[in-house]
Image (cartoon, rainbow, N blue to C red; front, side, top):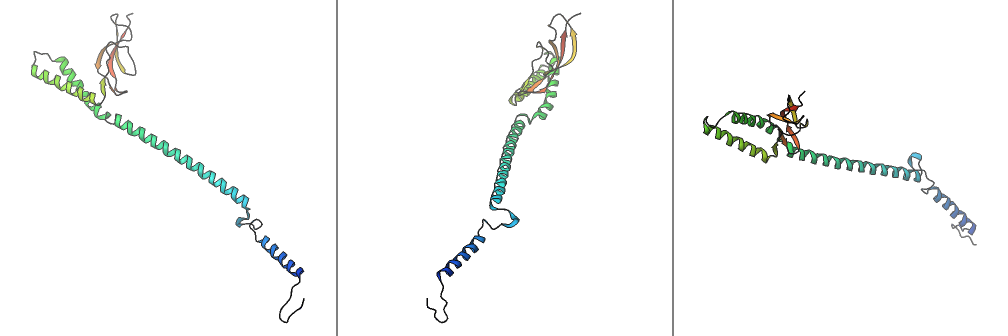
Length: 193
């Protein structure tokens, strides 16, 4: 090859040598051999990110379950409040009914019939109002004693009733839906000795 002034001519072996140097320089700058910050390889970084993603997914699922449990609990509490929220009001009304029943039990038709009839009507109205709120009286007399619904105030030895039977009711018990609002105060029969 002819050399001209100011121009260098290159031999084919020089071109190959330059290409080899460029290839080596490119390889040194590739991501596989270049260690990222922190000295971790890409595989290690990927594994760390996958682990973090799994932990985040698990955390998400736990939070989702907690939220669902919270919703269920709030729903139950709301239902409980709707069903039994007026319990204290009803407990205040029950003694009024007790007094009306006592007045009716001691009054006779000869004693001021209009007053007795007024008390009877008031008593009936109160019981009707309570029934609208799902308050029902417990029928105790003549039934077997049940400590879940009855409170024994006394025991009476008798042969006229089966043992462990309620023979007298001092104070009526009431249910609010399926829940005991107040137990019946009763006398229970026991066998004669």
